[in-house]
Length: 80
Image (tube, rainbow, N blue to C red; front, side, top):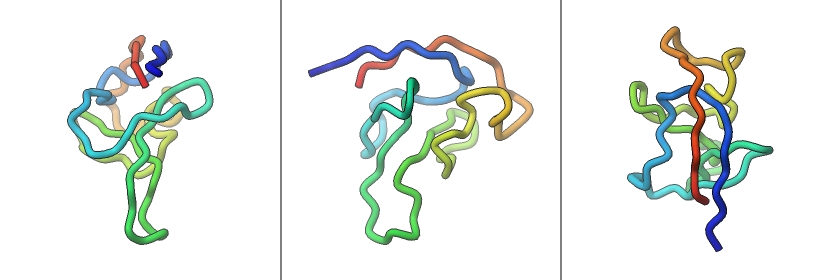
């Protein structure tokens, strides 16, 4: 069942279906869940169009958690 999630976060977060990870609900927003072979690797991550994988699911979901100076708030509509 597809569910559309609407939320604000950095415009550079990437929710295109270009990854082997799957999109999952993270509170009221969305992050990616990866299959990992070792528990020391991050399972919940974000993907950024500028920086690639961000190893924290909170990265860039709000300005206080931005990872760079390019943060720009944007309304995402993501189907999970």
